[in-house]
Image (cartoon, rainbow, N blue to C red; front, side, top):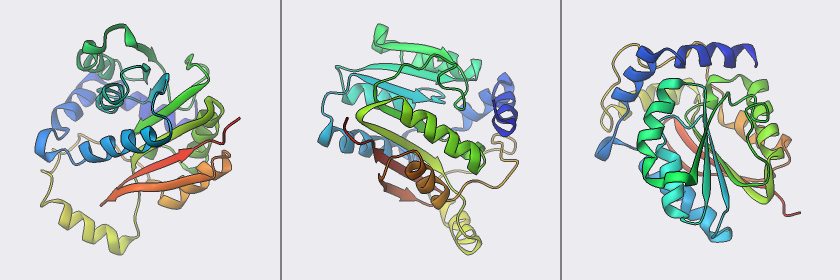
Length: 229
């Protein structure tokens, strides 16, 4: 496990920290990420209407996987996260899907070591890879791409670092849409990757069909499709 990823995993394994984050995570009308999750499902469905296997990497409380499994009732899901607290929440949130979901503890930088199966039709991740540096991020994309079936999708809904002038604008405007998180409920010890870090990572992993399907303030929905085999 890379050093930066190891540090982040240790923080999220703290039950008090992870619990406080979950309690402060916006829901309902304040959840700005409900729309991009639905967009991801809709775009995938345009060309892959019946995915068989969906893997949610660093799946947290299970919000993204829940949307995807509802959109694709014939699919089974694999949930992966390093946090025991997130596992507890995800088991509760995803219980209605029964044996369609398999839960695996593990880090996003060691997908094969965690037992993530290959030939996935869709590998998704949400709000996790911004804890990686550029090299680790590219390593994640490389490993994830290698676990995709031909024509499979790699989807990442994550925060990015904008230029400073936009950082100031976004920080002020965002307060009108979402309540501020309490101090100490999020962990960023280094600058976040930027948009180009993500796009370069997709392309270096061999996924050249990549675009930003949605963007608001600091968060982008990156979507890419592997070439058919």
